Amino acid sequence: MDRFLQDLLGSEILSSIPGSSSEERDAFISDYLSKLSSLSLEAVQTEESQSLAQASHSVLRSLQALAARSHKAIVESSDVLSDLNRQLPALAEDAKELREQIPKLEDEVGRFSQAYSKNADNAVLERRSRALLLTRNVDKLSDILELPSLLSTAISSSNPSSGDTSASAAGSSVSGLSGYSTALDIYSHIKRLHHLYPTSSLVSSVAREAEGCMERMRSSLIQSLRSPGLKLPAAIRIIGWLRRVAPQRGAGGSNIASRGSQNREGGYGALFLVCRLGHLNSLLEALEPLRELADHEIEAKDGGGPTQDRARKGETPWSSGQHTERYLKRYIEIFREQSFAIVSMYRSIFPAGTPEDVELDAKATLKSTKATDLRQGEASTPSTLDPLQPLPSVLSTFPLHLVDVLMTTLRRYLPGVRDRSARESLMTQLLYCAASLGRLGSDFSPMLASLSSAGPEEDDSESGLVEWVEVVKKHRALVGRLDLLASGLATSSRGKS
Image 1 (cartoon, rainbow, N blue to C red):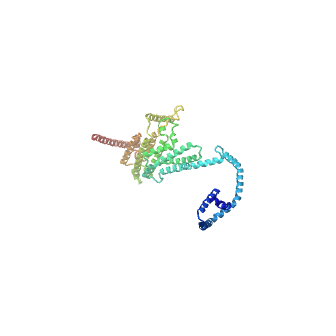
Image 2 (cartoon, rainbow, N blue to C red; image 1 turned 180 degrees about the vertical axis):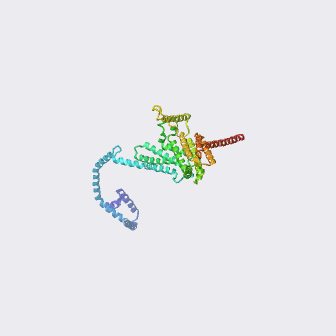
Image 3 (cartoon, rainbow, N blue to C red; image 1 turned 90 degrees about the vertical axis):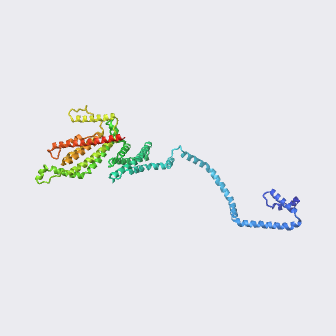
């Protein structure tokens, strides 16, 4: 029946039915004809026509809704489709031109790879590699560039302020010298960098700036040795820092003495003594008002004969030397404290070496003395004098200079003290000063006997000697009583224990 209906309808009508392929159209037609064959004639005439009209109307409404919803896309698709016939030939022409340019592109790529390869010498590549290297190490370079500023900050934080002149301010400034250790560590790092990269201009400039900072540090350390409140721990640290920051100063005596104290001390011992001597001189210069009053008394004393003669002539007699006594008492007190502190601190900072070194120092001092005597005599010959004799220790001559300064002052001002008790007090003070230095091996008490010949009057030398003997006796008696008291206390403490 289905085949009969297909033949009856004809191929033209059947070909108008939509379908993607002939098989699908055949299947669709077979299904529809099977449906028609199952209906009655009346249903085919009435219901089927209505069903087809409804389906047609539904399809029409769907097409209208699709056109209203997508008319822009449909129009644009139509325009693109119309332009596609023109664009496809242009695309083919461009593809052909690209195929023709590919060999030239390959040649240019080969030339570029040869010119800018890693093994080729090219200035552009070198600049780029340096720029990349700088970019990768910019943090390290910034750290290196900050080293001089860090060094300067560490030194500045340790420098004592110039306005601090009191002992407490000096002590606090000395205690703040710990920043120098940081500065020396930074300087050692800079020197190590300069040793590793001697051809680097950047490292060389940083090293030059660091040298300028170290010069400031050397000056500050030397100035710290002159501070009023210098203590032994701070002095030891300062000398240790000077050994690190100025090692060339330690080799000052190596060309003269191959062994002995010069090699142990170098130039630091002399530097320390010079700085502390400068501090001592500054303290003594602070007594200038008292010294001027003492000078006026000395001038008044030297202006005429004895006091009785000037009084009979109606002249004003000079005072009995109260200002001179005050000046000398303060002078001797400062001298005793500072000289003992200088020598004891020097011995603690630069301790004596082995007994062989001490013997070498003694021989050097003896040879130096003999050479001086030979130069002063007439029997000196070039063969007997060695210009490169080992120099003695600086400490062996420094106390002599101190004593010479003290004796010069005493010879000028001690005769101006007329009161006997005042003179005895001054002489006792001098004996204590001599004993203080005597504990360090620099007793100058025998030299004080020469002062007894210069009494308050020119014709009173014998009474001056008697006065000196009495002062020595009293001093020895007092020292003996103190020794007995100390030994008694020690015995009692041992008995209790």
